[in-house]
Image (cartoon, rainbow, N blue to C red; front, side, top):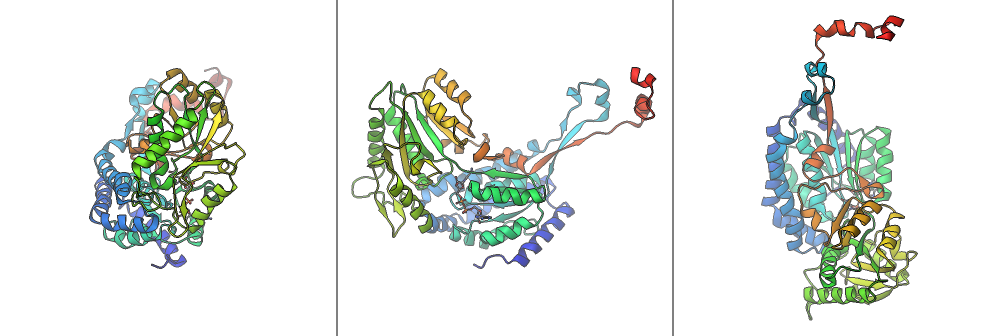
Length: 470
Ligand code: NAD
C-alpha cells in the first residue's frame, strides 16, 4: 500500500480542522458511537489483525488477543459507558473560598483540544495506535493516526479496514515513514501523542514547540528489577520476571531491562535466580520445542533490530549463563540471561529492547536505590519484596512512571491506573480517563453578575489613598 502523499497529508489537515469547527465530534452520542465502532472494527477483523501482527513480529495470536485486541475492545466499551462521567461539568460553587463568588457560577468544562495526531510505534501496534486514538475520540477531538512503517502488515491492514468503521470526516490514517512524519509535524495540530524512543521524541518536541503544540510522550528506558535479599520465593520471582521479559521477545517498553541482585546478605541469590529462570524457560519451551522454533515466542521485528541486539551481546563483557542461541534467518533469539555485568557494559547503556536480561550484583538494596536514582528515571521499576520498610525506602528513594511489587508487566491489565513515564521515560499518561484528559483541556467559565458593579467600583483607576486604605 503506498504511503500517504504530502498533498494528501495537507488535505487531511485542512479537512479535519474544518470538521472540528462543524462540532461533528462534540456530541457524546457521536463519540460513544465512534468508540464502539472501533471495538466493532477489532471484533470483526481480529483474525486479520492477529495475522498481520504475526507476519510483522511472529507474535503468538494468544499474546495478541490477551494483551492487545481484547483489552482495547474492553476499553472502547468502558469509554462509551464512562464518558458521561468524565465530561461532567465541574461545579465549583461549593468550594470557592470567597462566598460572594458562588454567584459567579464557577464551572470547569472538559473541552476538546481540537485536532490531534497520534504517532504510533511497531511493538504493540493495536494498543499503541488505538488507545491514544480512543482518548482523542472520547475528548471530542478529530484525529490523525500515523501508523508505524516498521509493522507494515499491521499498518496496511488497518489502513484498509479503518475507513469502513470510523467516520472519515473526523479520523484518518496516515501511512509512511520519517518524511511523512516530518511533513505532518510542519503543520499545526492541537495535540501530538507520540509513543516511541527518546531520540525521536526530541525531534517531535522541537517541531511541536514551533507551534506551541502540547505533546504527550510515551517513551522507553531501562526498567530495572530489584530483588530484596529477604524475598523468600525466588522461584516465583524468576518465573514472573521471565514472563515479562520474554513476552513479545522483550520488545515491550515495560519489559524488565536488567536485574539488580544484592548478594551481601544472601550469597547465591543470583544463582537461584538463574536456576529459576532456566526452569521457567524449560517449562515454557519443553524439550524438542526450543524458543527458536516455538510458535509461542515472537521474533525480533526486523534485521536492523536483530543486528542491534546481536551487537549488544557481542560487545558485552558479561557471561551468558542461559540462552544465547539465535537464528539470523527468522530473527529469533533465545531468552538470554547474563552475569558479570558492570554499569559500564554495553548492555547497560541504552534500553536493550530484546530477550536479553543482564544481572548486576550490588551489595545492598540501598546500593540498588543509589544505582537507579543516579540514572534516567525508568518507565517502571519492579521490586520483589515483602518488607514494607524496604518498599517505602525504594519508593521514596527513586522515581519512575510505575512501581510494581512482586510481578512484572501485569500493571498494563489494570484499566484504572495511569500509564506513563517521568523525565526521560516521557510525560503525560494514558488508559481510559487519563488518555481522555491528554486530549482535553480544562476550560474555566464564570458569569459575573452585572448587579455587583458597586462592589467593583474601587478597582478602576484613578487610584487614590482612600481606595488603597480599603
Ligand atoms: P518506531 O520506529 O515505529 O517509531 C515510532 C514512530 O516514530 C513511527 O510512527 C515512526 O514513523 C516515527 N519516526 C521514527 N523516526 C522518526 C524521525 N526521525 N522523525 C519523525 N518521526 C519518526 O518505534 P520505536 O521508536 O523503535 O519504538 C520503540 C521505542 O518505543 C522503545 O524505546 C520503547 O520503549 C518505546 N515505547 C514506549 C511505550 C510507552 O508507552 N511508554 C510503548 C511502546 C514503545
